[in-house]
Image (tube, rainbow, N blue to C red; front, top):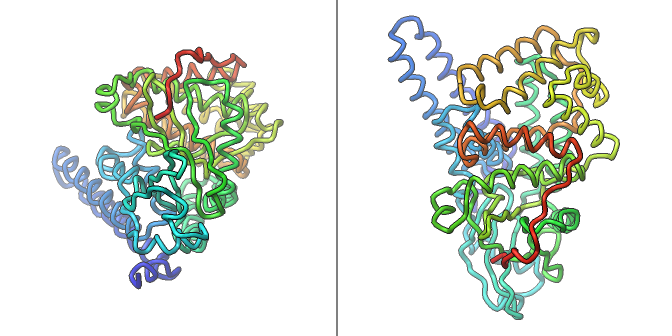
Length: 449
């Protein structure tokens, strides 16, 4: 308990995060200095070893710090398309293998929040959590009426920890902004406005019901039902969903679930939420996405969602349609309407390069060639350096996070790198053009668990 409190101290978290970042940077800098003195094969081998060491440092440090730092590791571990394979192999463990807090520590807190002993509220309560994440952990239980439920419990003192970690992230964002000459402060403000909602279970419960309502026409999507009588600001009780994580492809196949159908469904659900409704689940890492029998999808964890204004949703939809259709003039006009501004506002090169980058991400012939992708990414950054953005709409932070994570998932469960990007591009255009989502006949729907 004393050790836990030590790592929650703000100076300790700042100091440790800075130390780890410094070790990683110095490791790569030292490697660069030796690049010209040896054979290319030897350098590549040392580089892979450095990737592995750096990934392990991040993994061990975020497990030590917990809080929002775990979300940072989860994001890196969800992007095999952008980060080296060593990072993906190490950090993907964070999706569902975060060490849980001991039940002896959590039980008094749970009972205080429930206002009653656990065995009074629940007929059964498994003391071993089924999932542990950055801000909370989830237990399986059974109500006295026989319903199987999941009980999500925030960690003690997590609100204070979130505020500290946001300060650390702000410092990191400031450093990255200066390095790339790209103003990410509005993006940070957007995250800072949304992430604190993740430590309010009432907010999450309302999000869950609202998105379930807007997607109620779909029989291929399951969102847990809230059990309001046992839900409070720090505890969320909901229907238990017994599914398989969408990245566990062998298990999916064994259960008779077709992974090549799950990824198109996933993209269809997300882009319907973003482009048609403007209210979407904004935390699509694999631990929150489950496949169910009948090739259906379950979405969990609605602590982080985003709601566009109707005006911004329409502008975003038109800009996205123009981008993926290759209509450069309409795309530039749309980005300006969204609030993007460059230092030289008469030069559209930064906007055009952004469109080129996202089209490349959705082109299978380009996406599968890592060297070409890296060249396009470098060209995009070089263009931004020549004419840096001076204004970036904070509204874009969360949809861009969803886009990024979907591209990463497309590389792992989309069938292949030839299929995943194409599915994304086709689905974006489907909803940007206003096509109605296909509905599964209700007679084909099987129980959620």
